Image 1 (cartoon, rainbow, N blue to C red):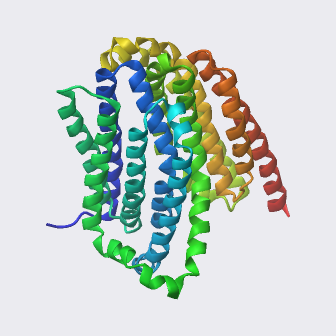
Image 2: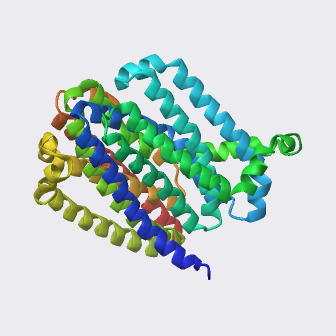
Image 3: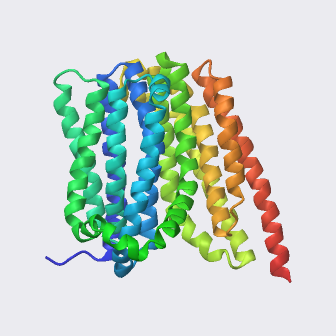
Length: 415
């Protein structure tokens, strides 16, 4: 059988990636219908906490996929990746286990689900290394298979569990089993690299100087990714802790709001290369940036209209009548997440012009946001309105800073 071309694999990857989001939504719909609102809220809060941990795995995948694109380079540096994976995993496990009692109280869970999530975290890092290898070699078909084995396994197990009673531990077990099946496939498909990873201790004494270099590189990738997952997870964590009776409704609101992110980051995949290419010519860059910003603004306006008049009608058919109230918060939630998406588009702008000062602004937002959400968390609307105000303020500051930077670029290009 003739293998698929790289371009066809890329096209199929995008199509299957959209389908993957659909299967993940199906999983959430099934869990929400089989659980009470509070239990579904606890599950989403635990997943929000897990998503912050998963930044480690995502960063390893990004580092391997972007930096180790040559076959020889992948083989040569797997020992460094192995030691760094061990360092990062150990650090996270130590921190979580030291503070486990506080984490359990905050998330309203027992120790066993937290322990299962740590097992998923370890698997996620190991699995992400293999997926990074697929990405580096542009083996998108294998990447699709890896993702679909994970999601289909967890859905199949969930269906089996639904015949009996469903609880938080069974749902987490579905996730754990799905990731394990996917890891077994990845382990087989990328076995030469994993064998080198397991033998990496033999190369440590010869090439140990590369370990700190890789550590710094991955740390930089983590710094770039952590804000996205932290800022999108924080509200669910706080609502689950402070408004437990409404956490299930808020989880459904987030399910819909994050559709903006799925669509937005798919759009970024198309827009970012053009922005990067134009970065060397100021006039071309400004025209490109303004066109892209106008396109993003139009799409977000259309999205807000959909969240106002269309999507609220789909809540009851999909998630059930227990979550009907979620539709009342769609507009303010969509506004908040639209502004957050605008923030991350501005981040891609700063990356294109090689300006890293945006990390200072995001760090300030990361400190101010939890203070604001805890202060104004008496109701779901208050939480979402606070996010909208803070994200709007942060986006305004970043736009002003971007205009200042553009003016400096204009003066530099005029010399």
